[in-house]
Length: 336
Image (cartoon, rainbow, N blue to C red; front, side, top):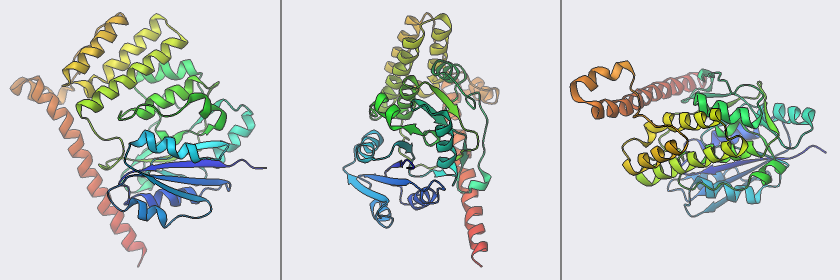
């Protein structure tokens, strides 16, 4: 008997994207799919949109707003599948994604093997998605995965993974409520409990960027403190596998790479510095690229740092608007 895959979708204010996301799931060539959408107290019409898709294979539930972790845990509580596919409410799966990974799982015959895949970033047009290969695009042991992720500041997006029920239960629930890196912490834990990561190159996903309404976008003092707590957990996970000079160096590099997100929150930066000291090193303030140096020379580091935060976001917002226009025009042309 073919195994059911549970596709779990937490949704908050996702009325613009949710139908396309669900449609990408129902188009999967793996026929044994259940979909569970958890509306996390949305203030828009997300729940109404989800209800239009409700069927024997698509279950929709709602709860008061508690955040992405709570929504994912609720979906997992209801899931019946032998494998779990996590999917954000604004992202898309290639039609063959699950089938290709399930075939790889069958060949491996190891229920603790974790399956990964490439992801491409896009604004509105998936045909323009950019797939940037990283050093994680290969089979990895848990230790090598964590070392590579920390040293090179690379990661997988949530939707790439396919996780067996056994591995999901071994990893436990989502715990980092309010953290912008709740998925980073969770999947470090999943990797730790796995026998290894199997990269399935032909299984693709599409990660929508430039979406201001996504579940993970906030940088309040509370969110930054939660972000640091997630990173500190990941550091403990790596050191529990191997506490060595190279592992400690990787941990310090992880903290240094994330200083950009912590900077300006002095109490959190101080915590990060203390942790780096425990690891035998120190952290520097975030480095700025040469193109921001004139701003630093004229107005100081703080002004240059603020520009480093604002300008890339502004460029991405502009690119997103242009892509949305081209997407709208292409749809209008196709409907003629």
